[in-house]
Image (cartoon, rainbow, N blue to C red; front, side, top):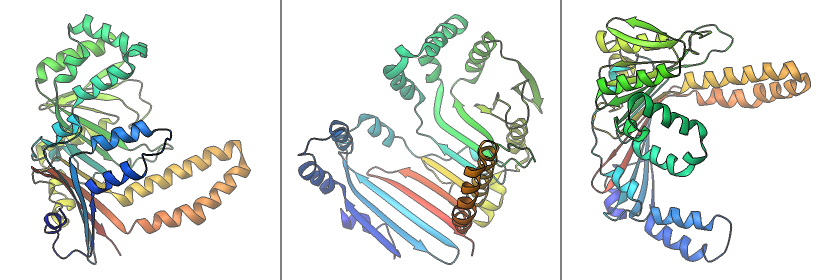
Length: 354
């Protein structure tokens, strides 16, 4: 197992190998002979990991780039049927990159999302005690004649979200976000969703941008606190910002998207290749948002307890902020993962700014 994994790493600066098979046997023999709380849960997790044989990690570092690769090898006998089903999904190219603005804060896409299975799991665990879900069942059946399970089955496996920075000078600058769901039969799903939402009499207003319609909450106090939904192509999008919704719509038309931005022109992360999931994070912007949240928290605390606020301010200025400032050297990070016949591969690239 070691040799078959090691050949995937060409002259790494760091390399680690772990035999998962031996690790499972060690845990079973050495630790599980004792009784302790949660033992049954641990046994179940170990059983689910049956089939995974080896773990390897390698890293390469240059002056401006840090690259990491993780490989999990497995055989045909996976202990968890849900995981086995996921691993059989073939890699594909990401279609939603064309929706993202050039400089997103966070971008994520996957083609292995199973909303029907997630709903089934939730339904089995808590549905009977969830009065709101029971009420939704009745409303959906009345308005559309379909069950919630049938509605979820219309959601494809592709799921994506885009987060951008809020550049407005509001007291509460919440990042803008959009999630995208691939829909199998858009017209049918759109009609059912509109019926369901209209039954609750939410105060939504219709907006048109180009040839695309979307609906947003009329009571929104500011952009970023504006629930909305709409359809573009075969995708349902939901978000909190009409300005980002318009950017997403425009990106598909004018090509002013992340694929033609600095991320791809200067820092090729192989996100256009066939994958099972990809992600991108602008670490510097994200750390700045964390700082803003900490400052806001300090301001709120100061209103009620000045002494506590002073202590938090000292901790933030002398400890937290210097750590966050140091992390800004890791400018941007991209991650891609794809499944092969006998492994899960995770590649990551981080650009370093000295």
